[in-house]
Length: 292
Image (cartoon, rainbow, N blue to C red; front, side, top):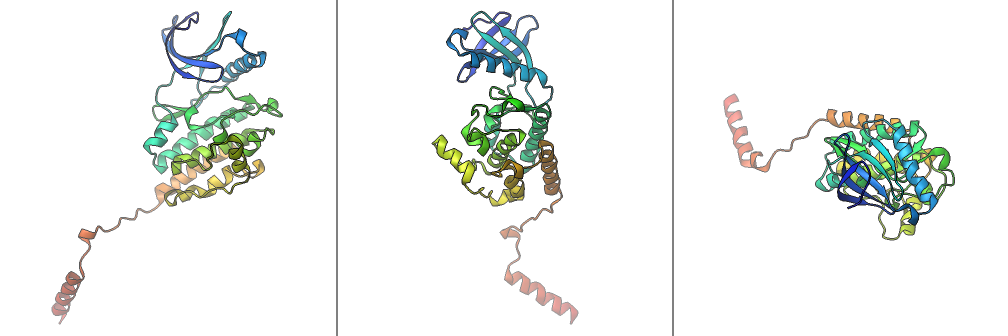
């Protein structure tokens, strides 16, 4: 097992391109953490190490219940590591697979939008918002994995980073991005939560990027079409046509949730309780006799 001073490492729980994540305990405090450990420094480019340090610095600036919290940054002779809070409530991907109600979906999207508002207000873009990077503490969604996150001033001409299925058109093209790129990703996540599948899908990353840039925005299933106007704005090809802020998205999700709650419930009569034509005629005959 890997050795990180000050931590008792238990088991590997995840892996990325240049780092692995372990379940661990901070020895001095007895606190359970997730330990993101960078590959051996000697095997990496300087830019990879800089990106790892930037991730820790960005997390240290954020303090919001919808954003994973950082506890420590460890610099070792051979390896560097970030200790973050360990969240074991499963991913949004798990909940999409199990099925989500419309009310739960809107509640989750509102919480995610508020967390994004916190990021964007501090000049930070996540750039990799997707169901696998959203964990749960009880009912509360938490945005994790800031490995692709950057400051908005650095995002001008930055490298292409993120997951192709959730990238905005401008992000996939390597163009400058800001918070509105995260809103596009949130739109893809919302569509997937409501429909059970992604709006655009293709095995080839280049073809997928073309779909994000040029394909018409697909329609939601009928049971979820109440959210189509919001989806259309979030998935707009041009960033200027998207909502002005994550906070505006949170307000819209809240409005849609109230609208659903206020809608009258239509209860269909079950066939076995529906009166037959013979019964209707019999009642009509009795009524006519009683008034004669």
